[in-house]
Length: 446
Image (cartoon, rainbow, N blue to C red):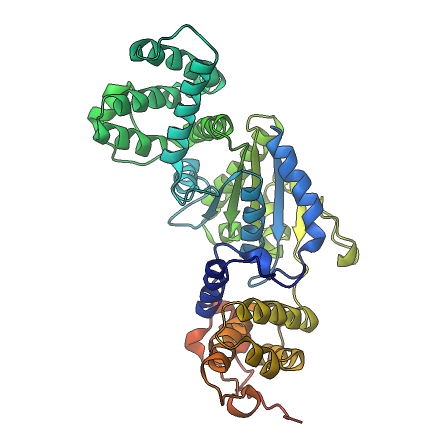
């Protein structure tokens, strides 16, 4: 990857820098400073192409806490959006999104659904685009429908809708019924019923009973209906110009901390989802899960369910340099001091594009200083380089780059000593920092 060029917009640079200043993973622009992910690009682009052609793909991302799994997932999401795919990132948790309740997973999926042009939740925009595409198809196909004959057009679109959703309707007829009801509500100008039916299609609870009765649907989405709704969503996405969906199930390792019966159900739900993907039920789905090595290898995780362990089995006994980027499990390479310094250089150059005094940045924050700061931050975390990137970038942006750009007489070698307090660390960083003691950055200006 090269240094960010002048074609990168100021707004995009600022969004990335602002997120790093807060110590969070940017929602977009990750390709501007990604380090060490180049080895995955070709294989993942092949997967995205397979999905866009109507196939399906799956990978299990493997890495310790703080190793950059969320960063990787959002970096992949950007590549997916460039290929026209929709994207949704769902964090698995025991209370908010338990994996064994697929209806909850589907609801969170829709809440987080986004495309290159629509922020979350993009469901209504996607459905409106789909219905418009159906109407256009009927008109362009020359089916002898007069332009002012709205009733005839409505009937023709209903028939086309049913044909497109035929496979879904066989197992989940409520999905197509709700779409039909939504279209009628929009045509009638009934905004309340339209909103209610979109919410019901998104798996939301407590939807107005009158809207459901008008559409001929009843009850709420359950665990078994969720897969049918996902199938219907993929059909709608494909027909309105989004050839697939990248679904990221993040922090699946939380299953290790739930009750044993819930863990069993959750692992079985994941196995069921993978089986359905292999059976071809979800054309256009690219599923990615993230977890720690302990989740994949330990008896409280994947190994507890033999059929799932067999599906995810990957040989990691060889040198990490020879890990295949096409394997089911992808092991994140992790950072060393050299790559951490390279990360700092890319962020410094990205920052220079929005700085008031870019020449001051390159002069006072040279490559050697970035390497020294990387060593100091890593030392404050007990020498654990793998979990240092978040804190390193936050310190670099907020404590060093901002000050050099703002104050003409600020020299980080003379006026800045690295200090780390517990309040600014996350749980993993705090654990690593225990016993590391205070670390000061003392650089020789010569």
